[in-house]
Image 1 (cartoon, helix red, strand yellow):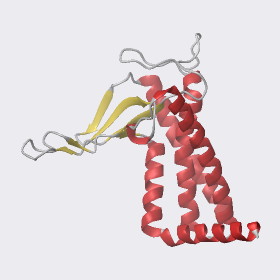
Image 2 (cartoon, rainbow, N blue to C red):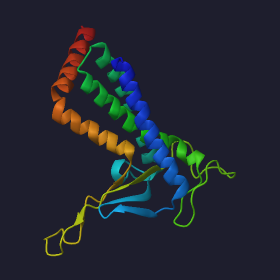
Image 3 (cartoon, helix red, strand yellow):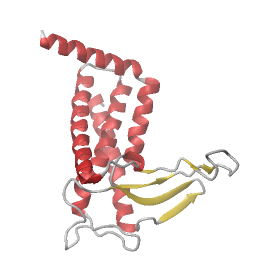
Image 4 (cartoon, helix red, strand yellow):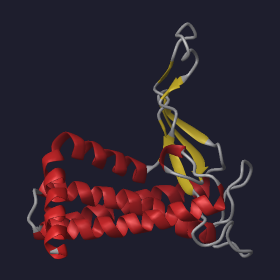
Length: 210
């Protein structure tokens, strides 16, 4: 199996799992509804109008900017991935970049299309796919579906500044996980390949300018 095909399969598999999980949650859970799998892991439905792990970028203009920025970033990453494949860079790094692309693309799908495809999720009503009255937002203004929650433990009350605080409180999704794993893999195993690719790009740009 070629490296290009492997990269394509990773992107397809991550996107498929990410979108299936999001659509299932969107069509079966109300906002704030959860299932406790373990004491330290819950399926907990929230919608995120901003960035990964529940972070936000204020206003409708900020939301549109973020979505457009993600699209440009993914386009750049796809171009970067093709360069790595042509240069026959280490397979592990190529697949890691593919994982990063899949994660970024997964959240783009929510932001671009979910507002048009679904009715609004509320604390009392489950969303409907392709509602008669139209979706809850215009194109590019959809909210990202998050559902993975790992409240690993709560700090004891006597701990200064952190007493009663839940350790790792963000709610996230499969796409966020793919991005995080890709970043850590790059930092731990593929820093040389990453630095070499940047250096190679600088040299290529310098040659073109001359």
